[in-house]
Length: 66
Image (cartoon, rainbow, N blue to C red; front, side):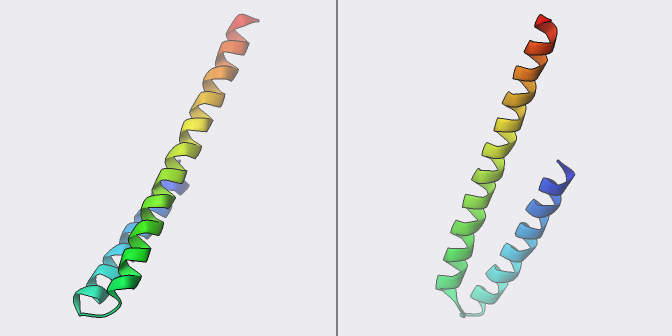
């Protein structure tokens, strides 16, 4: 969980850096690509977290049933 938070923070810092670079009139297309990649990575991380939570719940139900 902490690793995901750190990755998210690093991605936010990178996005901010790219936004500042784009605001100087450079690489607007690169910024859009970075935003899409960032959003995709967030969705993937959320899906992985959901899968882990589901696996934990399934395991908990299995252990409770025994």
